[in-house]
Length: 501
Ligand code: NDP
Image (tube, rainbow, N blue to C red; front, side, top):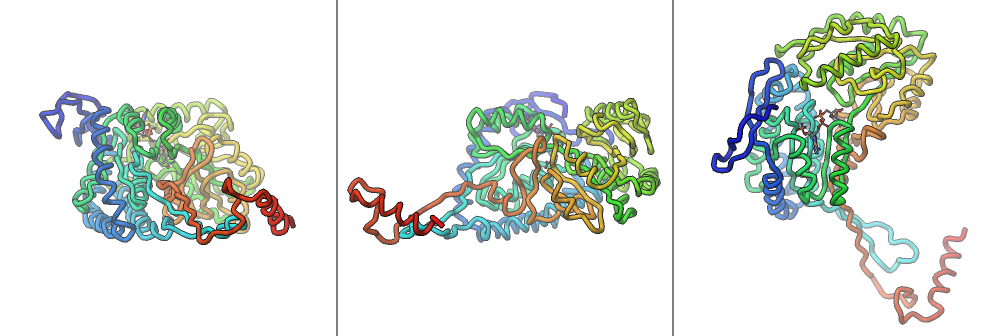
């Protein structure tokens, strides 16, 4: 992600800056990509806009056929894409495969369900308009700009791309500067599977390229990334009143009740906290465990955490920290937690050995410490003792974030889940909701707003159009200058009779 030269690698006749994408495990250069400026972004938006009409005209069944072809291609070249993900993020091969498996299922769901969710449907025309037929149809916006992060460089943007395309939109995708090769692969594979409809294009570069996409006249921006950038994206989109979907970070909590299956809870907490080296927006960053079972839970999670090893080999338990600057944030959170009186049950400040961080389990940390309040985005979990699960819920809800959460309880799982101020909860598991395509995905508060996935995720990329059609004329038409004086009085009388009870 260093800007290096001013040769356009795609078209040597058009000079522009290029940047390098690096393998975070080794620092090796894995690709060079153009830094697209505002003019290049505009060209991409204009070209997909021209192609969008034919894509929209295909209808749901036609688009499904094409998206199914793309899905089949993704499955055929699954290992190749997993390799690109590993090279740019450093994550272990099986983690990359798991990410792609979820993507394939989401792409299938979006294509298979778009018609049912979005097609024109009749609605009741109500008492006053009984002589009209009323319908609502969800029409595509046109062009959707998708701005994605690096941590799940396929799964996260595809939560917008697949659903936006299924709804009939064209898309310009701006991947993170750390994972442009993954973006390139996705866009090229779509072009290979669906050559007759060039409705997915790439814009690579840094934050300015993303900002140019926000200003390009795209009809909606779907942003996934940090809360700070989300606010900047919103401010830019406000200039043109461009609607925006904002999926930001989280500080997800896991609640362990006294009657929980403790082995399962410890296993899930550890996986939720450490998989992808903790670089998961819905990763477990805090655990609130009820006092009567806290010692046993801490023993279990500590014992298992000590066996996990980070590394660059495909079979490592966790990979490197992909974004070098995050290492300092992780170190500061651990230091701050220990300074505030917290204890390190596993690891500590010495666990930070860039580009890797060994698992760290902290406990008894001040609730105001950054390790409890801010997104750490590393293999660090804070386990706090609480009187009972209800106190755990109360503390979980003090966060300014509200993305996901998990509850382990045999008797009260769903009851506790409903009290959590978050967009998604897994009961007796972690992260499960992200793998259910029919479930909307998104948060509240500093975690953003709007939803990807599910029916809500399809509707997110459409604007409802409402239509009324006069079925027959009635003598009592109040919406005419030629209405008799008594008409409105009759309408009010009718209202009193039928709506006055
Ligand atoms: P960033 O916020 O740094 O970047 C996200 C994207 O925004 C990148 O493509 C970035 O480009 C681009 N960008 C940066 N500045 C601007 C700007 N001014 N205008 C428009 N676009 C801009 O996030 P990360 O890539 O570091 O991703 C990690 C974050 O993403 C974490 O906070 C994580 O929790 C969150 N996340 C949220 C998810 C969710 O669904 N809620 C899912 C996955 C991650 P560039 O990379 O070139 O700077």
